[in-house]
Length: 124
Image (cartoon, one colour):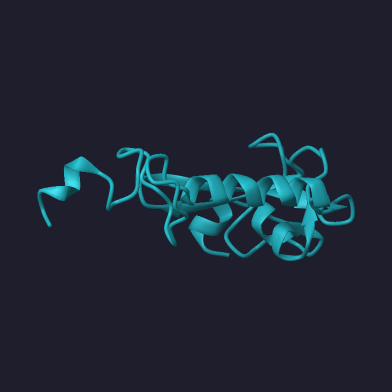
């Protein structure tokens, strides 16, 4: 075992407080939050079970691990929530001045579409 890996290997949690492994050295049954999301799961309120430490840019980097067997399935949006999201996205594309729905999101800095904005009319 290399010195770097040995520095980050603490499966009992005596040194770091929780079980600690090196990069790509965690045993099966643990996953990061992104890995859980890719598998259609979420931590589901469980505490951090372990961590992975590695040397990175700016110092030591950390990735927290959760137990896969305690993970819960991802929640899906209800039809009412999906409808509300659709209305909100439509409102972001609707110009306040000309009331036209644009194929792009209206910039919040302008508050209106690019054809109505007085800041951009001088460039046309």
